[in-house]
Length: 396
Image (tube, rainbow, N blue to C red):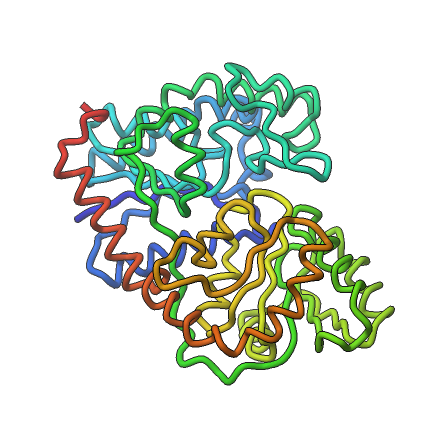
């Protein structure tokens, strides 16, 4: 099988789990014997583009001519079986779906965010969940509130792009929804259920879990939607030291909040940004990983990393978190989910600390059943085979 993997990489200065997942998936497919043809662009290329290309850049989310020409050449030369699209913005454009179909190549897309509808992709604005653009032909609220990059002009362009490409998105042969919540989002957008497959990302097996550590770990971008403020509000409702240690890892605009909490309380430690070895060490030192997102977080990779290391998870009941924690798993959940409310989180913290040891083995087993790369890669290859075998009706 021969697969084009298309992805516009996010800037390296902006750490992206999506970039990491795409790289890992390419490696996993290659190891499984699939011939991968990477069709990758990076937003880091933008400063070095020729003047003419820069002049056309504002229109590239709608139609990127250079990308279409290069993709056409790639398809003509290699005759791939499937185009697998991840992020098309800004240098590829959703038009790559039309280009692939023009050549009779079916398209699979992994949905990493909500940008079929939401210009920012987050369903989150001004510190709270926002779905004002759902059901609209044109996302006027996104323009009014400058939802894309804080610019009314760029928000207008993105809202227009989403309106122009509504038909494009409805022509995708198969959507990969990372969780059941994303599948719900796609059905609400009008995608038929038989074109949606729920397949989460997989992460490499870190090996046999170390013995359970103590306390809690919050790890991720230190931005409002990730819920650090919610967690710290809940944490302060307990006496210093009552819950064991809280370790905070990551970087972002709320770093001062993490540093202040560490200075204020002896049971809070700020670890800062970590490399892979540091991430592994922080997880092993803890008993429970916290995912306190206050938005509909699609698939926080930190949860899968926790399960792989045999650590249960305390999360909010938003987005993909309940799915990841296994709330609908017949084998039972491997953690706790609560409303995104400080009182609810505060009440759950001692329960999670007391119950962590009893869920450690189950957490690792859920990883092995659902998120191990052997499992997720096999399912992805089945998706490819399905669209090829069905004759890709939308590609014809």
